[in-house]
Image 1 (spheres, one colour):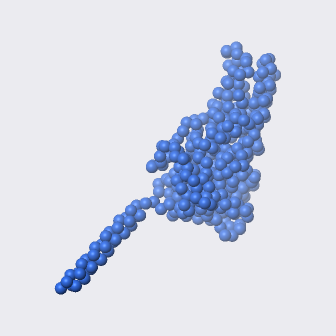
Image 2 (spheres, helix red, strand yellow):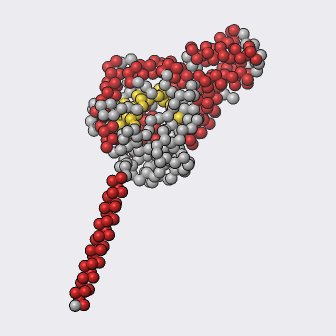
Image 3 (cartoon, one colour):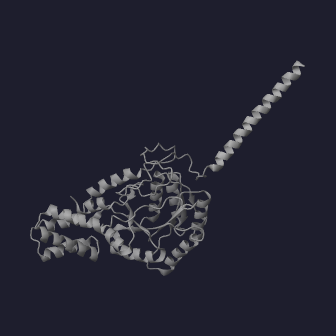
Length: 393
């Protein structure tokens, strides 16, 4: 009898253990089913560096999503093999400092003219010519000179510091600080935001896509890259390398010269399945005066839109190209409905007036600027800081 009771006790214990384990497994499955599946980014830590809030100075370029903290968190150290991108606010402050130290030809030219003491019509013509040389465009240059002349006549003040201050105020207004400069980076109606990046060859487009991925990773977004530039052999490798540095996957074709629209479509499809926050599509560089190439770019957009709207079309412009960049911008805008501008190579502000001209012509904001070769030398555009830097102290 005793051995029967012992065996019975063992059976009861085993049944009890199995019951508890079974309940735990069911609870785990239920909890797991309620979690949103995220992209496999290795073991990248939480990199939310105060991301998501909307600041008046453009310090954060992304949209807030539910659950984002309003508290600035210090980025954790990245695991071996992965980098920790610089937070948006930190890079913006650093780029402001770099802009302020830049040697602006516009600032030097205006200083010489306004400090001359004699403000006759010839001097005002020279001021307008200086503004035109900085690529502000005819309309903006004329408006700035007219406003400055009116103030000088009304207040009878001619010292250089005061006039420079007035000019800065007017330039800040010309930069349209009221424009929305946020980057679409939050899931919309259960799908990822889709960003399409376009531009001519040589503007640093693929590099800009890689740097933008770093900006969004720093804002704790799940990012997926699409290598739809299939005509340049090294483009997909370059993009994949950028993504791998911060744990962002890249969708690419195994064949050179593959249909870029198919690659873009597949990237968005995988982004939807992986429940990414944002998919960024790199497209091949186009000559704005080649109709067949531009039509192919329009095809990429049409194909992608069969499964998902495109939330953002960013045009990458080389700031040093001046008015030629304006012609590029207009053609691209006609083909793919540009929503924002990324200005690269803005290290020297001699041609920085292109910001004013392109915004006036297209009615879309400059959203990001690149001021160097470093991986985190891309930041939201801040009109106030830019006006101060362009005209000096």
